[in-house]
Length: 101
Image (cartoon, rainbow, N blue to C red; front, side, top):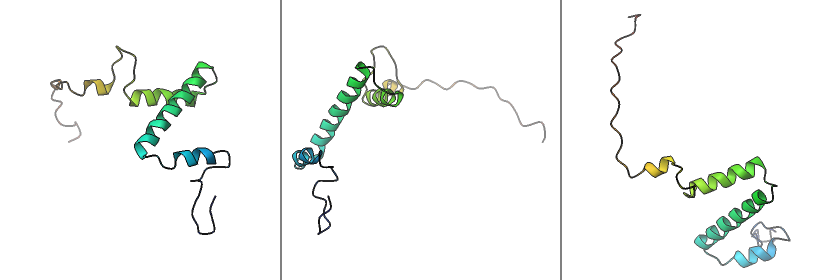
């Protein structure tokens, strides 16, 4: 809620969120990010396990897991090749110039 002096006392939280906002007020960014990450993973996992997840929820969970390197063992992703030497480029045939010149 915006006070008369123009400040936002509850950090944009609604009435039911105000107690939570008050608890989080003095936390650092690292701690907030960790809590948000855990809460989001927990909420999305509950939805998937309860079979109430939408395709957007599933996509969000999949992307979050992938972004954090949490993939099923044996499945390769582009990031897993990061430390390996690049393969030599293939020799491509010389095609010459276009016919219309």
